Length: 248
Picture 1: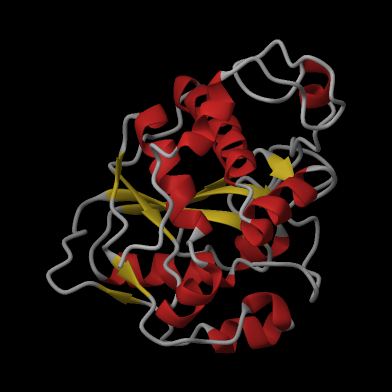
Picture 2: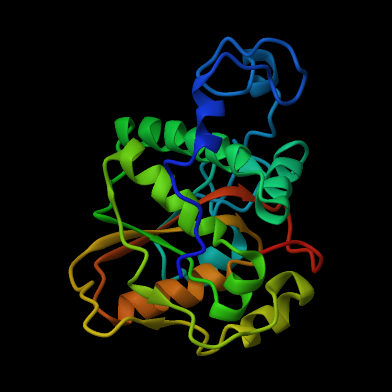
């Protein structure tokens, strides 16, 4: 039984109607539910590490950990800090099943990425959502990263492959753990589907929030060892520092 909500569900008619801004309740005057003023006030992530997107004091630099040892992924693309109101919107999408908010955030990420492609960012050949263990998927009812990737795919004209990456073992939720425990928790957590072919491909992993980068690194290592040419990370938000009580 497929517990993922259908992308053609009537819930999405809300996105195409005349609507109010979800933040100030004024007319949005946009094809999405944010007015121009509130969109400008979102916590845009401008100064960041050129590789992992960790917020820094200025742009055009690399953070200390990335300078000391480059991660398995090439670049993280993320439009926002994990701060208000983006954090609240993500929580309502992820934990309260408010899918229109997730769709709105995905469209914002798509606009960010399309501008990045226009500025020279290499376009991947596949979008790969972070997989969710079957037990957790059954409990929540949907995988939010799978939904994000499926919404991004037609907007970016990039194929979404949500069967290639697997999470065969149920591990503790990342938000329950400190930074060191997150890395240990992800040891052997992911796998590739049988006969998965990634050799020579440029792929992008789709996630909701990036904190320590443990999930991104584990998946990128798996894909690179399988022969992927390049792995990028696309996510909605990046935490400003590696706090133990933040999501991953």
